Image (cartoon, rainbow, N blue to C red; front, side):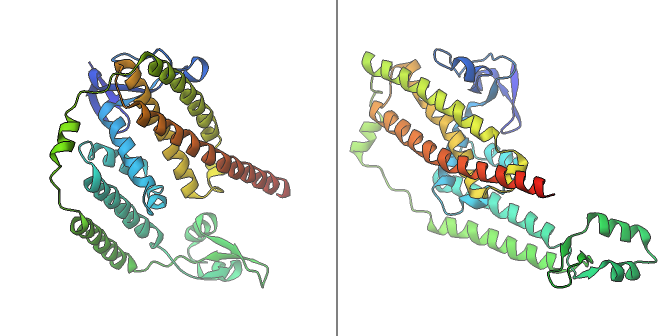
Length: 318
């Protein structure tokens, strides 16, 4: 049997199914239920295991770089392509894929924003210029850009004029894209041979968790699930109108945190199911995750409240 993964847009075997979020998780939690299941109920959020691992690596890579805000402008189709082509990518190879997707998005954005230009004129001048083209005049007034002149106190309409800077812009952007690829390749460190001691440590058997540690991890898993559910409620307040008033990089941080909740919870539940893992490392990750979530929650709550007040006041004034 196969299922369709919405992240990479591929059909996958059921053995690769991962339940990111149970339909009733907010109500009864996820304790005692396994996410690596070949069956799921309608309403569960699912993806393939390769995508789940890849998304975690992508968000960790993005959150640690100064171009994380640029990644927020990458569209859903481009992200799906990035995930699909990065299942086997890590480190510098993954970073290259991410940055190339960002540059390709910039090319598309530039081509869109530079398609039209032109100055602004008042309605009388616009009517005079397009008096023999009534349909064009109607469309300019209906779909064109408008502004209020602060001096003349009248509404102005942009007269669209198309320019030939698109080709040059595209060349410049593609030049930057190749430059990025070259820089990453040049700066990529040469692989070093791992010391024998580390190699032996890597090959060592996983550490078996004690009964007390397993109990603690189960408690932690429930706490992470509760915090993740509360965070998703907050994310639900980020409606399209609200997003227009919230900085993109703050939205991106929230999306990264939302994905980190899934990754963190998956690590805890996997260790609990298999009774092996690095207990100290897992607990540190959980602590860092919850701490970051609190900071982001406080900031995002304030921004959403301010955006709602602004929208409400604008509606009242109108």
